[in-house]
Image (cartoon, rainbow, N blue to C red):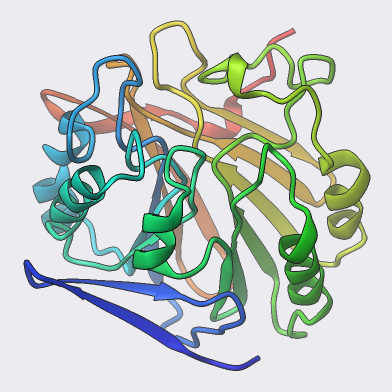
Length: 286
């Protein structure tokens, strides 16, 4: 694949490393960690300019107590893609000591987002893992984005063991399937159906790699689910989020070497970061 770097230098000396949709990022270190945080603008009712304040308060600890290669925002890092909201969010993102990769959520998408970040979807490879960032349109992966996904999956290197797909919405969710009792952030955002079962899932089930689908559209209120985990054949579905002030959370993925890794589900509050639960122990509500 053709490799291109996009580096954006913001006026307040902030650099985001953001990949284009056909790139590979080859990094040789075998041991590394990264985090995934969803809905990082926080509460959809009482929001602010900048990232969720309770999460911003954890940045010093994230910088000093963890050695992250990069961070991932799984969508909705701003309440609206306007200049003031994006600039304020970038000011907070600049406080991290490592690059942040973003999967655009429904609140992020717009001309200004593209002006800053150029693409809604892209990929990079690190060691034996392929990372794919998608941005569904009304919960659907369609058109050029679906073609892109097919191309990436069909072109996976033989040394790839894992594929991490980062999205915002839980596109595998439906009120009528096994995930229906998971309470997503806003049911009004669900369009009534998605093409996941018919067009996306079949691309994944035939692969030899283990697939990890991670979404960031939970946890924004007291009455919604804070997180989820479900493994089905070679696909593992995970979702995380914050903003509700109760069980706000994010994920840490620690690669012990290039073939073995662990998940840690971290909660945070005024006292700092703590172990919230064993992610793999989660059971779908019935």
